[in-house]
Length: 408
Ligand SMILES: *Cc1c(COP(=O)(O)O)cnc(C)c1O
Image 1 (cartoon, rainbow, N blue to C red):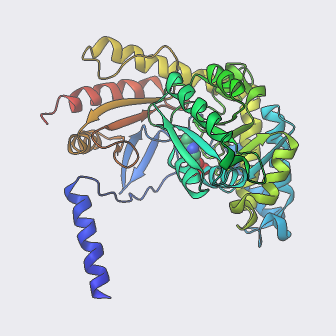
Image 2: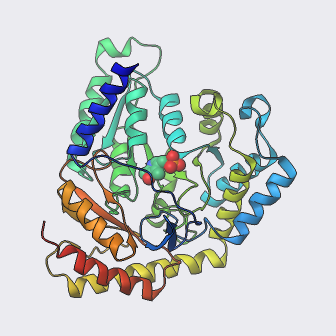
């Protein structure tokens, strides 16, 4: 036992020396622009609760009502006896919201990614990933044993080269011996989680059609925020109908927890049969499913439209301010709006120092470091919410200015 503990302690020491050690901070308040941590109040710019729904009365009421009617737990996986009313309602509401024939909710976005990719692909297939896709997709691709190829971030030329290679590979005699035709699946995020930029979904959809590949788009940071029905970036770009597999999460703008897949009925029926994290895992608790349903309904309503507009007004205010005050280029203005605004720092130790200086001023933005982003690309990931007020943004701006001027 002591040798085991010694080894772990030595590994932890390495992490500390590399400025990569992480620890939990206990939050004693709901998600909101203000967080209580260790008895102190902080202005929070790190949540993915973009529309402020995590603490919205309509979602809380729905969760409480579901607990009253269906209890705290689900007792089994959905395929055994845990497929409760709130789960069916959520699947229906999601399909309707996204305008697809069917949908399936998972306990997490991570489970949706690993379950779906694992169900569809195996060692005969090729998975083509954007260099910056989320860890859940990377893990899914590795787990299923398919050949994995990575294209440069949003680089269509690179993607096309890989698709051409996959196409010739699939027609090689040694490959076509297998029972089914080998497939190529392209996976991207629509709005990237750590950079906030957008994938060229239209061009990607054209490429996948040209090469007969499938396309899966993770809208974790776009659901509820883009498009006239707030379905996501695919809606805004008018390409939803071309995407075989639309993924989203319930724990960001939708205010609850979980993940989902939308698409044609056969896709959903196949996932119910084959997605291992769906088949072999206890169904999400009724409260989570009911809160998510209320979150979708909120997003669909006029109040959802108002929140979305307020969020973009906040993003605009922050960008305008940093544009005039910071000419160093550290915070670039983008043409396309995103609630995720990374402030690139580089070195891990400097990012930690700046985050600590911000905490001193009552601003909470943890430094994002490896392995969430590449080594030497540490950053402050500022996220804005519809529930921030103009004064909050003024305060953030002032705190950032003084913290960024720290000597490294
Ligand atoms: C958060 C996130 C996930 C995982 O979703 P969870 O519900 O938190 O497990 C997947 N993809 C992206 C892009 C994410 O940001």
